[in-house]
Image: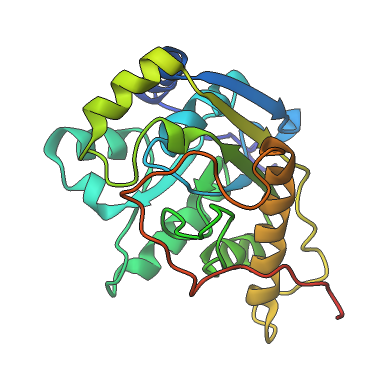
Length: 258
């Protein structure tokens, strides 16, 4: 008889960190969470894909996920794992190291595929904090799509808006002033969990499948983001002078079959 499937159990340290994130976000902002994650997917297998607009994003998403009973394992840059205390905590919490720009970067997808089989994995398809002039999602890297197609795990898009008003792009530079301003102003930070992305007609390894899946995922994040910023349809009202602009990866929504 087959052994019953046992979902990954988030360590106590990570669950405690998520509760701390909720307190921290409440001090600096007003968090509004909409949408949901289907109950049967909250412990996995599931892939969450989010837009990336600020260094504060992981804290916001940790708090938002905690409110839904979700403890995601985050794919994070290797730099965080190199700090003695932070790195140890990240590894203990089950987060996944990504060595960008090195031969070891492929190992992150293998680790994420293993993790996605019995838990929730959170990643940013853009692969960096976005530099789009209007702070809309950039054209994504194909890692999230290849992970989804290779595992067959459900993808839920997550849109967030407002975290760029809490911490500047170049944090920790300018962080103290930004935090002091946030404590006084407490900007609204919105997070929306969208409907699962339909990738059922795409097959791993098929020509162009990873690119098409990537575009669908980024389109889904973009569509979920639209109602979060109704008064800022073109450009963000909050201007961060430390954030550079890069138009080389502007995402143009595609129509399937067009």
